Amino acid sequence: MNMKRFTVLAIAGMLCAPLAAHADGPYSSIDLTSEQTEFVKQAVAKRLKDPDSAKFPDKFSAVRDDSDKESVTVCGEVNGKNSFGAYSGATPFYISLIPPFSGPGTKEPFYALVTMIGGGEFEPAVVVEMCKEFGIRSF
Image (cartoon, rainbow, N blue to C red):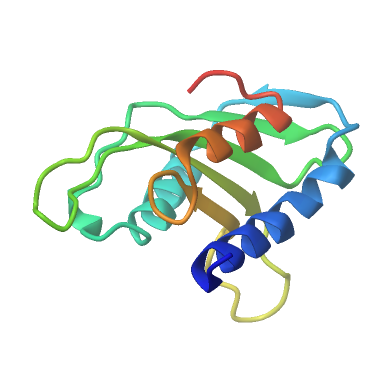
């Protein structure tokens, strides 16, 4: 196994570990606030080769774990330009929002805990499966 494949598998394993803790809990669909939606768009766009080219649908699918009222899991699709300057087509993403640590100087309303975008480091099917683990079937 080459080192790049091993690294990707190791990262995927670390990212899936929290699912074991969440897999038992029920989830409730929620509507994101405009502030949350913009934060998600910015966090995902930063991971693209050309962040300014990011195109998103009007809404994302979001759920909240009923046992943890503050964390939000968001799944959706993004289309962005590739290295050749062409749009590569919609690819799924997964992001978990958590509230910031309280204290003086906290400016951001949320922190992006994990971002996975299909087609790069992760196969799109892996991202879709992560979303399904949280009860998100379509986005």
